[in-house]
Image (cartoon, rainbow, N blue to C red; front, top):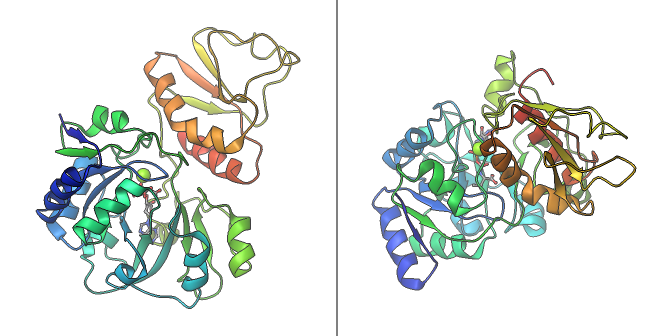
Amino acid sequence: MARILDDSPANIECLAQALLADRLVGVPTETVYGLAGNALSQSACKRIYEAKGRPFHDPLIVHVFDLEMLDRVAIRHDRLAEVAAAFWPGPLTVILRRRASVPNVVTSGLDTVAVRIPAHPAFRHLVAAASIPLAAPSANPFGYISPTTSAHVEAQLGDRIDFILEGGPCIVGIESTILDLTHPKIPRILRPGGITADRIEAIIGPVDSSIISMEGNPDERVLAPGLLDRHYSPTTPLHLRNRAFGPGELEALPVRVAALCFRRPDSAVGQVGANTYWLTEDGDPAEAAQRLFSILRELDAAGYESIEAEPAPDEGIGNAINDRLRRAAGAGQ
Ligand code: TXA
Ligand code: MG
């Protein structure tokens, strides 16, 4: 069992010391909970991979307090100042050229490093107290749904880590957007997330946001090694429909199949059954993103035979929700 600690000054000091001694701490961020270790320590970072069961070819994100700390791990790109002023601290990860101080295990041997300045106040206290960059992938076993509460982290990694910093439920609920600034021609979005492509384009102009499918393409796998087609999956098979549930379609589902709607179905769609779930009451996409992973876990624990999910409206953070639902459904969708 991991000890779950609140962010009192004494606890933050204890957790900072643990991190400096190469131990791992479950940490809250505004996106999802992370599994943090000293990004400059090869042995701490190896432990992160081992605790997650993550393959070493899938590099880690490094979390820093500010741009000064960023300089210890990465080289600033010309566009970084604008991006940082607009979105940091916040749910955006930027790929930059790395510095030699970063152990190879963090970057999977790439010459780039993923960096983020997180916004969650408790996590920021901890990064400041430890005064070191912290590598932190999402705190889930590799391939499973990311955690959005300390209880999710405890349930899955509690026997493998010593501490979890309590930070309440994550506000954004899905992982950060990953923006690659190192491409010679055009910045690209490698993963849709908390910050939409439109907002990034408003700051730096055109970005390539065509989502890349990694399967069967060894070159692209080097570009974004972790973006495997099947990821964030519940154990229960999930099927992503190509359109919302229509009249009569909910009633037609067997009781052992859960219906996952974007918003509470109205009477035109039909009766809501015990197997009908929704991400948001009134169609707020931010609320839907925030609840997505918790609901997937709830459905997984409820023993359904399968989950039939409808897509979110495909705009803004809805893109990121649909990306996670596609990944939960596995390749070929
Ligand atoms: O919101 C988030 O980003 C959360 C919180 C904890 O910060 N973290 C997170 O980390 O989602 P993780 O490890 O689950 O996902 C990081 C992704 C992986 O797909 C990895 O392959 C990619 O970032 N990545 C890391 N370094 C990279 C690099 N140098 N080039 C391309 N992709 C990279
Ligand atoms: Mg992850």
